[in-house]
Length: 451
Image (cartoon, rainbow, N blue to C red; front, side, top):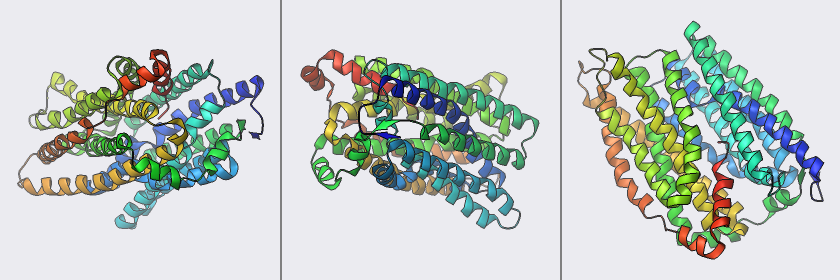
C-alpha cells in the first residue's frame, strides 16, 4: 500500500518481514525456472544447439520489456508493479512446460513456444526487478538497511541451494521430460505465491513520483557523460561473455560428454554455490582495489572458461575420477565471475552516476547493455556453434565441436576486453569528494543484492 507520509517503524518492520518471506520463496521458484532447467528441458525436446544458444541470451533480451516496469510503477507503485510482473513471469513459464506436450506433434512449434515462453519469462522478470532496489531502500532505514539486504540475500541463496539439491535427487530418480515439466510448474506456483507477499508491502509515494519523472532529458544528459558511455560499452562486453560462455558450458557437458541430467544439475550447483563467496569477495576487493579493477579481473576470470574447454580431457577414453573433478572449474569460474562483474559494475555505477540521474541511467544501461548484448550474443553464439560443427569431420569426437567453439569465442572476447580496460578510474575521486566511510557504505550497500 502506498503511503503519503514516511513509513512508521511498525510499517517498515512489517514490510521487511514480507520482503524476506518473498525472497525465501523466490529462491525456490528461481531454481525451478532458471537457466539450468530451461537448457535441460530444451535438450529433452531435441532443440538444436543454435536454439539453445538463443536461450542463453534470453536473460538479456528480456530487458526490452523493462520500460513497462517503470510505466507500471508510475501508476500503481513499486510493490504492486513487481508483484504484477512476477505473476506474469510465472504464467509465462507455463508456456515452457506446455512445449513438452506440443513436441509430441510438432518440434518446430514446440521450439517456438519454448522461445516465446523464455523471452516473456525473463522480460517480465526484468520489468519487475527494475524498481526492486529502490523498494528495498524505501522500506528500510540507514540503521537496518544492510541487515535487511544481507538477510534477504541469505534466504534466497539458502533456499535456492536446497532446491537445486532436491532437483538433482528428483532427476536421479527419473530424468523424463514429465519430471522437468513438473519442476517448472512447481516453480511457477511458488513464484505466484511469492508475489502475494510483495503486495502486502507498504511503501511511500517517492518511487511512484520518481517513475513518473520525464526520462528523455536525463537520457540526453547521460549520453554526453564519458564515464557512463564507457560503462555501457564495458557492460555490453561483460554480458556478451556471459551469454557466449556460461550456457554453452552446460551444453558442452551434456552433448559433448553425455552426462546425465542429475550430474548436469550438480555442475550448476557448483556454479550457484561459487556465487556466495564471490558476493563477499566483491565487497573486500572493491574497497581495496576499486570496482573498475574488480570488473576487469572478473572478466578475465570468465575468459578462463574458454581456455579450460580448449584443453579439457577428451571423452574417449572416459576421463578418470580425478580428471572428472576438473570439470567443476568452468562452472565455478562462471558463477564467481558473474557475481564479481555484476556487483562491481553496480558499485561503479553508484559511485560514478549522480543520484538524481540513477533511475533513468539505470534503465538506459540495462536496456542497451542487456538487449543489445542479448541480440549480439544470440547471433554470435549460434553462428559459431554452426561454424564449429562444420569444422568437425564425420568421425570427430562429440566434444571437438565445443573445442572449436570456445577457441573462437575466447579470441573474440579477448579482443573485447579492450572496452573493459577503458573504464574510467573513479574510486580515488569519489574518496576525495565523499570520504572513505561513505565510499564503504556505498560498496557494502550494493554488494549484497538478490540477483
